[in-house]
Amino acid sequence: MNQTFDLYIANETIASDAQQLGVAIDDLKRICVQVSSNIIQYPEVCLQLTYHITLPNQMLADKLDWPMWQPEQVGFSDYLWEETCLECFITGRTIDSHTVPEYTTSYIEINANPDGRYALYQFENYRNPATLPPTPLYQDDGHTCASIEWTNKPKQQSASARMNLLGQPNTLIKPELKPNNYERSFNVPLTQLSDSHLKYAINNTIIEQIHPCVILWLDKTPLYFATSHSSPPDFHNRQYWSRFEL
Image (cartoon, rainbow, N blue to C red; front, side, top):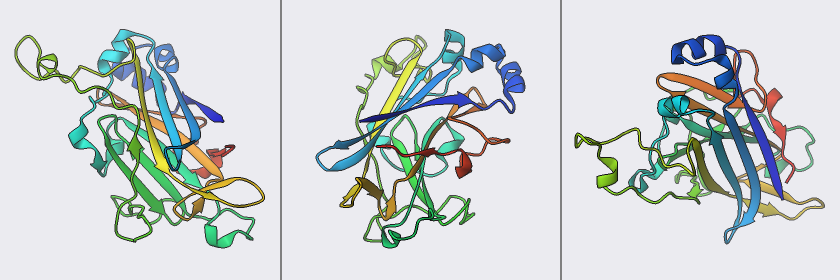
């Protein structure tokens, strides 16, 4: 079973963003961002999130900050939203409150960078705790940070492929499926619950709402993508989150 999300660019500053990037507003609106979610056995049950980005022209592709895959970078890292960031917010009921019909105020934020870095955070309610970086989401032992597992790891570029004609590292080389197409996929470990209806939980949170979203940095300009947006854009506003239907 697959739940697919079409993400749209926030229009709040799209005119000034287009001007700053030297492109047309329609060029930015034609950026296609789609996220698919699946429940898989790998070998244990996981939520698999796949992010697919298509840019409408080479001009935008040349401006996109899409870091190369770097196996040595895989691990927990803060402040990923300051770069291109693949995100997902999750909330629902807690395992200890099955009889309570209201959603809990707590939620989980997942950040992932195309180079392999990631972070999972726990919030008690809207942007709380307000500390930066946010509070990590911990595994059941209470001191090991929760993690993801990357699934479509690109082949590592050879040293020669990363060098330009001047013998300097070419930071513009991007791992692509085909021109102007980019994809990353990762798994989030889950617990499958026995209930009258099939339910899944990440740590102690039963997934009932989900909000995949993306920040794409082009040059020094961040563009925000989600299924729908508040004004100003705010991924933490659960009023715009979707019902989890897997």
